[in-house]
Amino acid sequence: MVSREHKRAALYEKLQLLRSITNSHALNKTSIIVDASKYIEELKQKVERLNQDIVNAQTTSSSSDQTSLPVVTVETLEKGFLINAFSEKSCPGLLVSVLEAFEDLGLNVLEARVSCADSFRLQAVGGENEEEGESIDAHAVKQAVAVAIKNWSENTENE
View 1 (cartoon, rainbow, N blue to C red):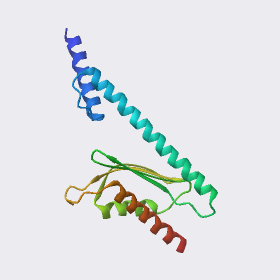
View 2: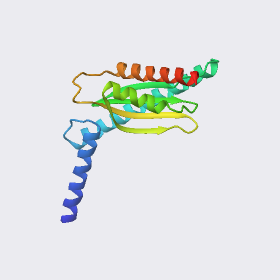
View 3: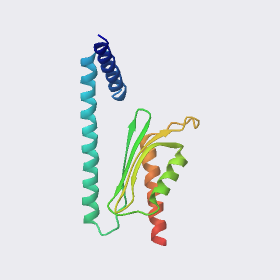
View 4: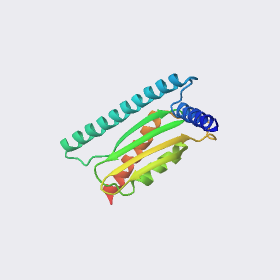
């Protein structure tokens, strides 16, 4: 009997975790799983859009003679933003510029993955600083990152 109760409690915990991750308000198992399935589909669509943005940026950069700047996408999350920046080439010093832009906006970096070896790739989750009081939108974040990239680009060209 204890084993059956233990399994039931473990399943309940896992369903509640799934419910919280997918922002589901459902109460029964079936609805939680349906909500999770919808959430996974939304994530797949986001990945598809981001991959398409990268392909478009690569196509644009290969057709122009100018040095290409990193492509930036910003998506609004429940509590913050998902910021992606990608460039085919390495960008020494760009990470510092982007993080300074976050700081200027009052964004706290909650989680980040960065690769700066052969190419530049940044994926960061930023949350608004509760003490600031002003609300920030995704467009403002994208603009700030774009300005940081532009300033970085101008500074590296002058060196």
